[in-house]
Image (cartoon, rainbow, N blue to C red; front, side, top):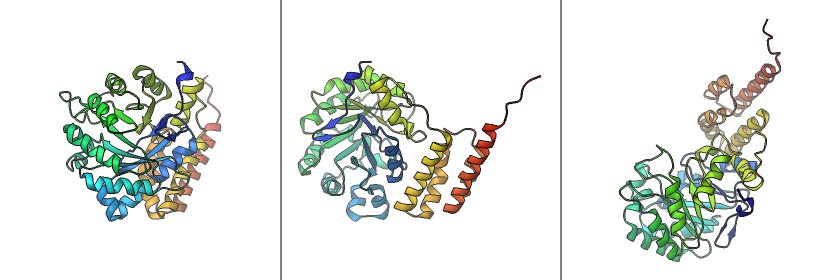
Length: 343
């Protein structure tokens, strides 16, 4: 691969440090996780969870937590979903006033509770109406660029992404992210690189970001080489490996994948994540959330069955620290034990 063509991404006037984006994974990409991923390096921009305009404008507790950010959480994209254009315009203006350097309209989420509210990938079903909606949202923004995240179409009989991407560019959208599946596929099967490539070819000037099934630096490079996309958005591949952005950027620009973080480094990431949750939410939330997140971190720390099970029972900060201490002590003792010599 010609490393000279790998350059940091620019979205309108927003210059990023890399061409790698952290996806807005519902239930996972909150502020504490974004801070962990950023600390590992390589994240050009991170996105919030999907934000409901109604939740924003009513300032509900849940939505305010999803939209929470801080000085270290930049550059940040806030992603909105829904079908009420007036409320989306109001929410978009709120987002640009609350720290977003980019506002994104989600047209890719296949989850029923989103599509039944005329949001997410339901917007692919009426491209004319969607283009009019986006044009109005774009005109309501005062400073920040507007982007859109799409799927290929609702199903194989309605592949609308290439034509829709071209029309969105014409009304002022500054970047398209395309997930290489249809709504009907949800998260099954394989992301279609051919479909992503068709969207890349359809637009004239704006960057297109590829998304779907990037789990390794090699996957990342293959997507860029095959589709000619300007960058890659990574979601689930980052949940157990928040350092994947560091590895991908290094591989794209130098051809070298850095050494894997040590066990102690991985444990420290868990610790950082937990204490970000305590700081930005509270101890009770941190305990509850880490019980869910621990299994993701454990995917990269085998053997760790006992630690994973003990995390399910923690009730306090001290419990959390005690579990990590016991795990590290056990692993050090185990890893230092002499290997039996066969007779």
